[in-house]
Amino acid sequence: MGHIQDTTVWNNENIYKSFSDSTLINDVEKLTVQIASFSDKAKIFTAAIDALENNSNLPENLITNTKESLLERLNISSEMMTIMTFASCQLSTDAMNVEAKDLSGRLGILNSKFSKGAKPLQLFLQRVSPDFIKELLESDEMNQFSFELEHSRKLRDFLLSTSEEVLVSGLSQDGLHAWGKLYNALCGSMKIQVGDESLGLARAASLVREGDRSKREAAYNGINEAWRNHEESAAAILNAINGWRLEMSEHRGQKREMHYLDVSCHQSRIQRETLDALMDQTYKQREIGQEALLSMAKLMGIKKLAPYDLIAPAPNLGGSQESSTSFGEAIDIIAEAFSELTPEMGDFARMMADKGWIDAKPTENRSPGAYCTKFARTREPRVFITYTGSMGNVITLAHELGHAYHNWVMRDMPLAETSYSMTLAETASIFAETLVKKALLEKSTNREERLKIMWQNAESAAALLINIPARFEFEKNLVEARKVRPQSPEEMKVLMKNAWERWYGDTVTEYDEMFWANKLHFSISSLGFYNYPYLFGYLFSLGIYGQKDKYGNDFKNLYHRILCDTGRMSAEDLIKKHLSKDITKASFWQDSLNIVSAQVREFSQEVEK
Image: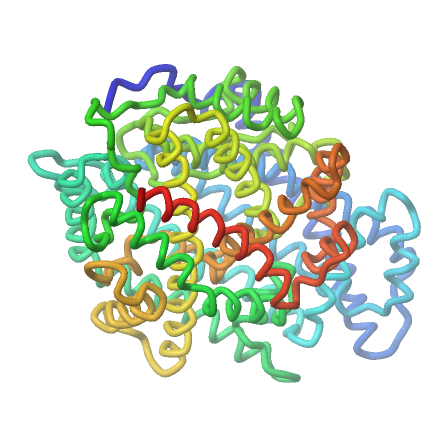
C-alpha cells in the first residue's frame, strides 16, 4: 500500500474543548440535577398507573404534566446523548483514554438513573386509554411523539409491574450492558501478533482488507489466535447477554409468548412476516452470492476463497504496483457520485471532511470497524473509520457518509421524529454505496478499472446474501441452544461452522469457526440480531434505487421524503406510502435480488473473458 495522505481527525471543539472544559463539567452537573428533578416529578405517573389499575380517577392536570414531562425527557435525552457521544468518540480513537472512560462510566450511572426515573412515564403512556393519547397529541408540539407512542404501545401485553420495570432498568446497567462494555474493553486492549509485529485489533483487522494475501492470512490467523486466548471470556459475554434476554422474555410473556424474533422485529420496526419473507427469499437465491464468491476466486487465480479473502481488494491484474486512494481523493470520488443524485449531497460529503467531522487516521488502541454517530444538541453527524486507502475503504466511507446524510436531511425536523430503526438506517448507507459504485463503473476507462468496481458489487453480494444470513443463522441457533444451557466455546464454534456451511456451501476453503468471537455485532448489548438489518437495507435500498428511472427528476425528492419519514413510520408503511409496494411479500425482495443477480452475472462474464 502507498502512503496515505489527507487523513484527518475529528474536530469536536465546538461541542467541548477537552474533558477538563468547564462547560462540559457544568453540563454534567446540570444534567445530574435535571435527572433528579425529572425523576421526582415523574412519580406522579406511578400514582396514575395505580389509578388505572384500581379504576379510580386520574390525578388532576395530568395532560399538562404529561406534555411537560415528554418535552423535558426529550431535552435531557438530547443533552445526555451529546455528552455520551463526546466520550465515545474519544474512546473509539483511543480505548485506553482514562478521562473518556471515567466520563463514560459516570454517564452510564446517570443514564441508568434517568431510565429508572423515566420508566413510570413510559409505562403510563403504554397503559393509558387511547382517548387520553388522542387528547395528549392534539397540539402540534406534541404531534412529534405520535409514532413513538403508537409503536411503544404495541408492547403493552409484555409489561411488568412498575416496580419491576424500574428494577430491571436499573439492574441492566451493571448487568446486561456491562457485558457489552467488557467486549469493547477487550477489543481496545487486545494485541494481535502479525509476523514480527504486535498490533492493535483495529490495525490488524485493516490488514485483512489489504492486497497482499500472505499479510491477510497472517492477520486473520493472528486475530483468531488472540480470540482463542480470550474465548472463555467471549463465550461468557454471549451467554450472559442472551441469557438475560431470554429471562426477560420469559417474565414478560405471561399473557402471550414473547418470541425473541418478535422483539427484534419491534426494535427494527418491521413485521415478523417481513423478516420471514426477506430471509426465505434470500435463502432460495443464495446461489447468487455463491456465484459471486466463485467468480472472485477465479479472478484471484484460486479455486476457492479462504475466509481471509472475503473482504480483500480486487487482485492487481495489470502487473503494476497496487494503487492506493488518498483520503482526499476518496472524498472527491464520493462527493462527485453523490452529486449525481443531487448537488446538495455532494456538497455535504465535502463539508464533512472540511469541518473535521470524519476521523480516519489510524491510531494506537483504536476500535475496529466504522460507524456514524451524531451530536444530538447541534444535529451534527460524525463518521469514524480507520482509513488505509483500499477501494473497500472508499466504499465503507461512502456507506458511513450515507448514514451521516440521512441525519443531515432530518436536522430541522422535530427531534422526536428523527430516531429511526437500524433496518431503515442501513437503507441510506447502502444506497450511498450504490451511488458510488455506479459512478465509478461509469467513469472507468479500462477493463481493469471496471473489474475492480464490479468486484465491489460481487463482494457486497457475497457479504450481504451469504455472510449476513449466516450470522442470523448462528445467532438464532445460539438463542435456541441457550434456552437449554450456556454454550461452551467449542459449542459456539460448531454453531458457527454449521451456519457457514448452510449458507456458503462448498464455496470457501474452510469455515471461520471463531467468527462468533471476533465479530463485535454479536456482543452489542443494546440490540439483538444486529445482522439482518444489513441485508434488509441492501435489498430495500436497491428496491428504492430501482425506481429511479420511473420517477425521473423527482427521484431525488422522493428519496429525501423517504429519509424524512424513517423516524415516524414502520418500514412497511414507508414503502406503501412512497412506492405503493408491499415488503411482506417475496416479490418485493425478488425484484431487488434480480438487480443483484444481474450485477453478479455481469462480473462473472467479465471474469470469464
